[in-house]
Length: 88
Image (cartoon, rainbow, N blue to C red; front, side, top):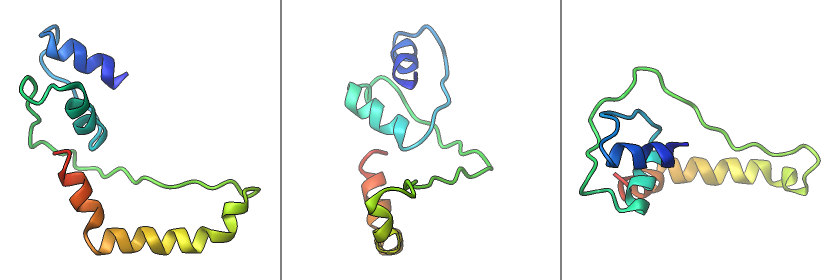
């Protein structure tokens, strides 16, 4: 897992680790490795899209449009960027 690999990296057993952001940034912070590990500015050229999946059988499906609008608002008003910034 990324957590296990962060431990190995912090111990100096490997020199570099590539992981996903913000997951990696969160784990570095949670594990207290901010003073031990340094993120790089490298970003892959490909973008990974993330999705929220709802079961068609779930009663939440009735609110799918509402969830979409709320997520769009959080993205558009900068809330998501602010949250991510706290882990970088």
